[in-house]
Image (cartoon, rainbow, N blue to C red):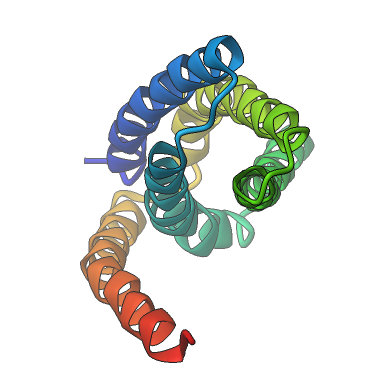
Length: 179
């Protein structure tokens, strides 16, 4: 299996969450009410699964190894663009969390910011995923030997094995430091 195989499977799960965000955005627009529990769960998913786990493997393993190859100018620019999109997603999620908090504190105008940030996510992610799946992942695999791909895949599996510990160590630390 190529190392991009698991990344593409992860895209399918992220796409499911994006559909849920799209549906929730429509509901918020119609009912003019934010469901904080839904947003908390969605933010946790995006931060832990989509960003730290999925983007983590892309940036910390695949893109790191690609940076050592003689990529075409177009491929290098695409990789840089993908990293910028990851950063945009992180920033947008942070702004979404802030807007949700302001909404809960009584700032009715923050509802519009929640909707704007959801729109950024549901617009950006499908295009981002398509760019990776259909235009980037498979062509860049040509730069790696079968042994390099196998090593990369093993490193990705190891990365995944560590994520549950990273996630819950941070939960315990956050709870220890509150108050």
